[in-house]
Amino acid sequence: MSRRVWVRALVLGVAFAVALGALVAGMTIWSASTWFTSKDPARFDSVSAELADNRPAYDAAAARVLELSAQTPGTTRVSMTEVDTFRIVAGVKRRDPSSPSDAQRLRVLREEVAIWQAKDGDRVFFRFFGEDSPTVWLMYSASDRDPSVFARDRGFRSLRIIDEHWTVLGPIPDDARDRAQWSG
Image (tube, rainbow, N blue to C red; front, top):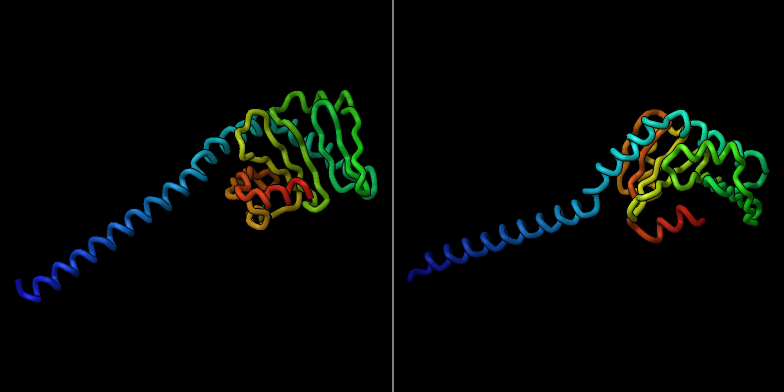
């Protein structure tokens, strides 16, 4: 065979290997992306429907958590469930039973806990019963006009803005960032 035929065969072989490698890399990236985000739209639909069905109750719960956060100067965190209300004031965690009106307000909702943290401003987060890990959150904010910046800064992998006050946030896939968001 002539040298020209060998060179041509080599070029075609290299081109085929590069194309195959690009295809495999593309499929791997697409597969990983789908694995990380494929559940978010369905979970977002579920949370959005829950908010639509119980909007006045969520508005009232968010207002109540913000009210509790303002009651005691130095409060850095409020967590409210149907049973208990936890406050961290000056580094000390205090547990009180939720009032009957708070328990009734939360009983209507599918949420598991409502959380306010001083580091997050006027944002209140709702976590839901029955959510597979990693967790999807419903966020209320009276003043946040661009929740996508907040979500990106805190490591949430996705979001759906419902309206000017409510946003569904996808999970934080990085364990260290997730702990930093909810523990500190």
